[in-house]
Length: 173
Image (cartoon, rainbow, N blue to C red):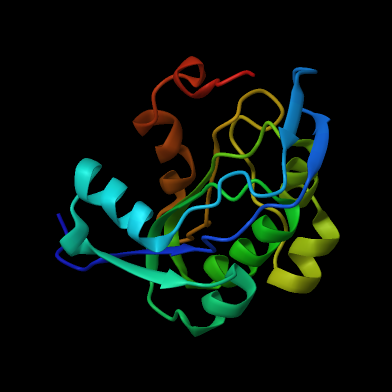
C-alpha cells in the first residue's frame, strides 16, 4: 500500500432541491440542506471507518478547490450527486489520472449524471478526448471507466475483474 495520503475534497455545504427519477423509475429527492455535514463530522466518520492519517481534507466547492490539486491519481471515487459537480470532478481529475487509472462514480443511477458521462461534446471540448467506455452505464448505480493506456492495453479490462458483480452496488431506492 502506498504511504501517500488520499485527498477528500468535499463541499460540506448544502445540496440544492432536486426532484427527479432514477434509472429504475424511483424517486430521487434531495431537499435543500440534505447531506450537509460539518468538517468535524466528516473527520469523525473517517476516524471511525478509515485511517485519518492518510487523509487530507479540503473545504470548499469542487470548482474552487480542485484546480489547486496537482497530484497524479491512480483511482478516484466520486459520489457528488449533481451533474455540475460531476463535470467539475471529471474536468480536474481526468487530466491527473494515470494511464490505466480508474474513476468510479457512485451516481450513475441519476439521469443527469449519466448525461455528463456520455456527453461527447463535454469530453471533447472540456476534457480533450472522446468519452471513455463506462462499465455498467444505465444498468447500475456504481460505474467505472479507465483512462486508456497504449502501454497497457489490457488495463481497460481490469475493472471488471477487480470489482464485485453489479448487484453489490445496485442501491435502488
